[in-house]
Length: 367
Picture 1 (tube, one colour):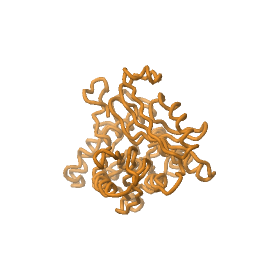
Picture 2 (cartoon, helix red, strand yellow):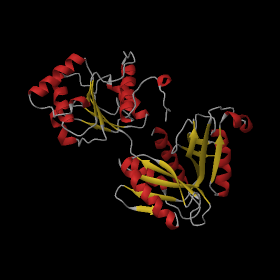
Picture 3 (cartoon, one colour):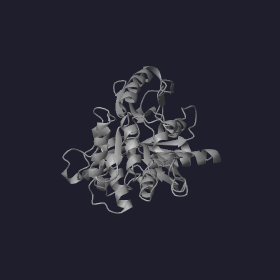
Picture 4 (tube, helix red, strand yellow):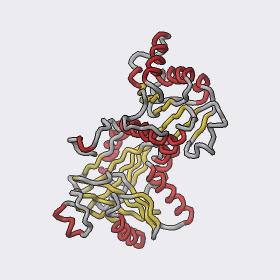
C-alpha cells in the first residue's frame, strides 16, 4: 500500500507539471515471483517510484518505459526468470518464474478512463472498487490498455469494446464481492484481463498516546496504513509526536461513540496503561463489528478485565476471541520498537489470514 500511495503522489505532481510519464504494472505471473499482479512502478526519466520486482527487472523496465513515453504506445514485456532462460536474458535472477509487465504512457494518448484518479479516490475516501485492465488482445475494439472501472456504488466507466465488456463486468461484480483479484481470458483466449480488487488502506485505531505508541504509529504509517490515534491528553496526542497519524481524536473512552464510528474493516490496539480506560474501551470495541482488538499488558490483567465484563454482562457472546492479549507475536520483543514490530506483524498475519509461522516451515506457496 505504501508504494501505491507514493506512486499516486508522483502521478499528481507530474500531472500538475504537465509532464508525461509511464506506469508499469505487473499483470500476470507464473511460478515464483517477488511481486504479484497489481504491483506498480512510476517512471519518468531518472524519476522512479515503486517496484515490479525485488530490484532485478527495474532497469530493463526503465529502458522500455523511455520508448513507451516517446511513442505513446503501451507494451507488455514478458520476463522469464526460469533457470533455463535466465542466462539468455542476462538478468541472473534464477527465481524460476514468469512475469508479464504492462508499461503505459500517462496521460494516455486518446480517450481512456482516468484510472489513477480512481485509485486515488479509493485510497483517500476509504472506498473500494474494481479495476479491469486489458493486457493482451488482438481485437480492434479492445486494444491493450483498455479498462473497465466498477465503483462501490455500482457505476462503471469503460472503453472495452463489444461483448467483452459485459463479460468483464460480470467478473468485476464477483471481484468486488470477494475482494480477490483475478486474471482471466475472454473471446476464446483472444483477450486477457487483470481484474483487480481495489481496497483502501487498513484502518488502524490506536488507543493511548504513551511513548510506546510512537513507534507503533510510525511503523503503521510507513506501511501506508490509515492510523487514528485516540487519547484525552493533548500534551501527548498531537501531530508533533505522531506525524504519521492521519487523524488524532482527543476524547475520554466514554466519549468514543460520539467521535468515531467503529466498523469491521478496522483493527484496534488498546495501549492506554489505564485499567479503567481499557475496560471501557474493550466494552465499546467488542460490542462493535470490528474484527481485531489487541490489548497491551499482562495476560492476567486482561483476563481479570474480561471476567469483569462477563460478570457485568457487558461482553457479547462469541466476541471474547476477538480480543488478542497480550497483543503481538512472540518474537522476544522488549523495547517499544520491538513491541511495535510484534504488534504490526500479528495484525498483518490476521488480516491476511496467515499463521505467522516461519516461512521455512511452510509447505504451500508463499503467495
